[in-house]
Image (cartoon, rainbow, N blue to C red; front, side):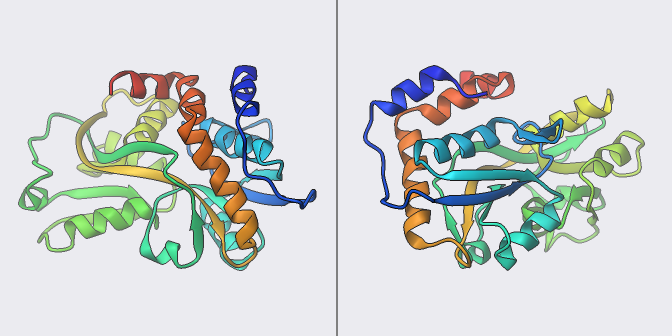
Length: 253
């Protein structure tokens, strides 16, 4: 649901424009609560609202589809779909994508069943642990980088985001490495009561990406300039703060 007040504010400010009245973009996202999710076959969530708001403000016709993440990435790389979100930045992706400014912020960290006394700042403390993570993904690649020189650590990488938390709850792994907000949402969804967020490892920014394969530079610039405008004018902050989980995030900063 878009907020009338947001658009009244946006309408009063000059925005990038184009003579092309038939501008169109297609986007893919995934089941990634609380950022994006599907309800009744329709994409919802703050990330979806940001993407659609930018489309409306830039006068671009947009379509957003919720897909399994491997398929979403495949379609973008093949040029079937223009863009996807929310994504982390990487050098590999930068070569193939136009990136927005960061539109959302959270953190990666560890979930555990009890008060395990491991120190994330000290890689040696991870030795001997079995750590579950969703992947292949930016999350799993970050964990692999963190643990690449740690002897005795075992990574349990699974293509389903619920499995790591189910395994942790059952005691089959020692910890889960995850986006904090996503992990908390999965714990609530699964009704798990014996898992808590244990410790932060690193900050993470999320972006919107558009493929260089099938998105013209001018159209990408129009869209990304609109995202920048929304950040400058506080429109994205207003969207995020209207969702309780993100309101709590901004209220504690």
